[in-house]
Image (tube, rainbow, N blue to C red):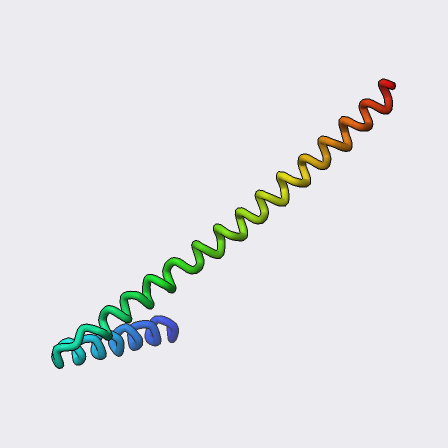
Length: 79
């Protein structure tokens, strides 16, 4: 319950900061705030994508090594 209050308080603070800067004729704070929000939004997805790619690459390499071992074992039994 306390987490909900903290998040609403932060939103009100950000909104108040943007509104006060817009009243002075500056739009820098709003643009910076939006950029920060997009940065925080994209980073978890980018991190999951990189981890997923590394996992896929390593599992593909391990699968190829297993197939190589299996083919050598088959050749040893046949030859």
